[in-house]
Length: 237
Image (cartoon, rainbow, N blue to C red; front, top):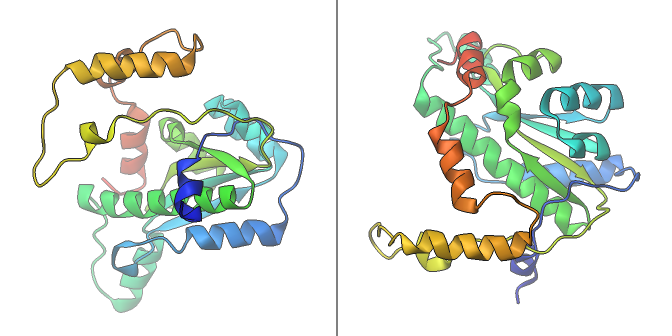
């Protein structure tokens, strides 16, 4: 097996960490590897906030309730960032028009690619972490805590550190349910029951609800208002 592919296939989320510090140079190496990810037209429409201060991590934990934030040595916040674009357009003397879904997709994809690259780089150096997406539900409060200016918004967090736990690899949907030749292929509903059984065996009683129930509960509920409100405040919608 190719060692890079093997590393990718061994991914599991780490939420408990040893009380060991990641060396500054190691962290910089990891983040720089993350920043080598593909980016739309090389605009690099993201920024990364490195949070190591325990008091600030406590404030982020108080907002999100994710224990990994306190346990980790580092909490990374990946920010969709058009502030630099604003500086450039001002300098060039042209109109700045950051609003709209297309712009948000550009920065969101850029930030997501860098975040995944960063976690993979960390895992290649025997570190571990967990990606936290729910910080978007507290985007207004996080923006204030991190002094995010207009035209920026928090997207993804990663708790990062030396692992103090090991998990089995979480099952993914079968290849044929998500990878199609030439055109989209709607799957028979039977795949849901089959994958529920796979996930239940993996969870071994640790989860009270089925995978399909969690999907249905999420997509039948209202989306959090915080994200849209913060995007409006940041002049992006």
